[in-house]
Amino acid sequence: MKKILAITGIRSDYDLMSNLFKKLNSDDYFELKLLVCGAHLSKTYGKTVDLIEKDNLDILMKIESLIDSDSKSSRLKTASIMLQNSIDIVNNYSPDLIIYAGDREEVLIGSMLGAFLEIPTAHFFGGDYTKSGLVDNQLRSAASKLSSIHFVSTYEHKMRLMNIGEPEYRIFQIGSPALDKFKTENVEMMGTIYKKLNIKPFDNFALVIYHPLNDNSYITFENILKCLEEINMKAFVSYPNTDAGNKEIINVIEKYKNHEAFYFYKNLDRNTFINIYRNAFFQIGNSSAGIVEAASVGIPVINIGARQEGRAANENVIFVDESYNHIKDGINKALKNEFLNKCRNIKNIYGDSNSSEKAYKILKKLEFKDYLLKLEDPNEI
Image (cartoon, rainbow, N blue to C red; front, side):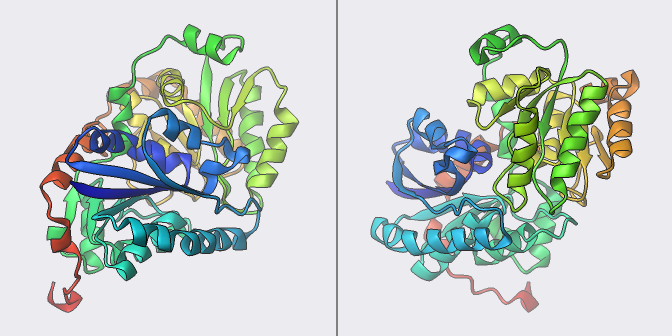
């Protein structure tokens, strides 16, 4: 039996990996346990550890690491709490492999734990890149250099890892596991969703997922709501993530929370969210979901600002800046029949909704310890 420890700190990375976790958990060849921390345990951000428990996955430890603040230093303090409180837990459990996903502080902690405790590690979604200037780029690259094995979504991501000195034999291109949920989650009629949420049905609606980028992000967020209000478009609106600037966005949500056109949510069960996604007219905001996932359900995306700029995007993505007029122009373009029809027929460059199965089969055949020592000289690769 191979012992695998998965680290997850926020709803977004758990949703990306949950199908793989379920596959590993159902196979007696593996013992899967989760180290749960960060926003998962915060009521402010929906206490999404409940989703993990609902999936009946074995949680090794819950670490209350999140500094629920709105400053740049809070993420660093959160990381330090997680590191300090996880070392002995991981060392005592002594897994055969540690896995983690994405570009937040948890991946750096996971990769450091593996490197210093001499445990093989697997990083998902390495090799990505944005021009936003956010620290996430550096976190992702640093974790990749510390990691033993890489599961990447595209050839571009694979080449980016090879360009920083990672040898090809360590890199497995599988597509994005984020897409698998569109294949695995059952279809529900929106009437059922409205009854579950106890809200009046929307005629048409958008999906809004917007996260802070700078101190003025709350202005952009309110511009989105104003533009939707102007064209009488209803919307399901997500709360922001924990990045600095989130509290001002939450203040805007409080201002609009009783508006009948908007349904604000901190946390939705996976099936409810996926069926809302499937039925949305378009997605708007700056979430990576718009870049990677929306093409799989054939809807337009209005991506606002620099957060995702520079990432490979499908043809359904419209990039605009933060101004009210540009957001409005982006929405108008997304609603044109010609563009809507094009979106319905896009083949997603990020994969075929079968990535978790590919990763599962690879993990089952690998001898993890063979990947632990990184002896390669980048000058000789």
